Image (tube, rainbow, N blue to C red; front, side, top):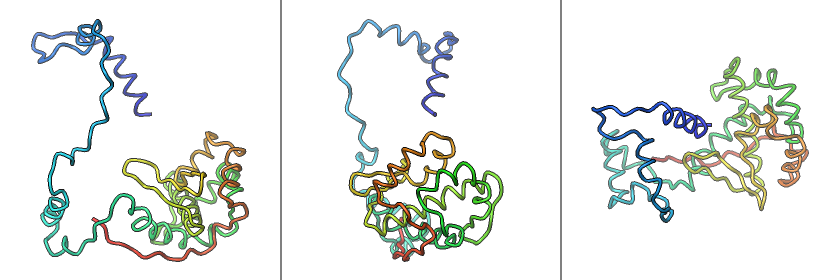
Length: 227
């Protein structure tokens, strides 16, 4: 959606953009016209991470944390790689949210989620609880329901040996064999119809979770301190 908006704004800007004597650069349209006759060059490789320009990144991170908090607190933190964030940092939070909502989730099975997302979403969302045990209303309740279902699915699949991936800037995904699922965007996709009932049932079977009661208690994972 962001790319579509930017593209639309770019098209309009190029239509309306006019040169001004005080501009530091010519308008984008003129610059593109100036290079339009040039042959296409090689496609550049993806830009490296900015941190590649730095040496001793771990030491710099520790110094930054010591500045933001204090040296003693920073020294007690355990380094966690991005690959470890899902299982070590997020998993305990997901399990706690699933456990808090176990009575709400009791009897809910993956194959019935399309019906819940379309016909029963509001009453289900109104019953979902935050980690503090509070209910929400309106769009906030629906947003919480999305996380409750995502947490319940993720923790259930992790108990079955699935692997979780949570790279920065991307949706959390769960993989079991060749099957892949993004559990925390599932409910909106079912509600909007962008994920059909038939397609979802195939995913349910691919993960072997038909009949799985999402209200089953999860085994708490070891919590981790991250920086």
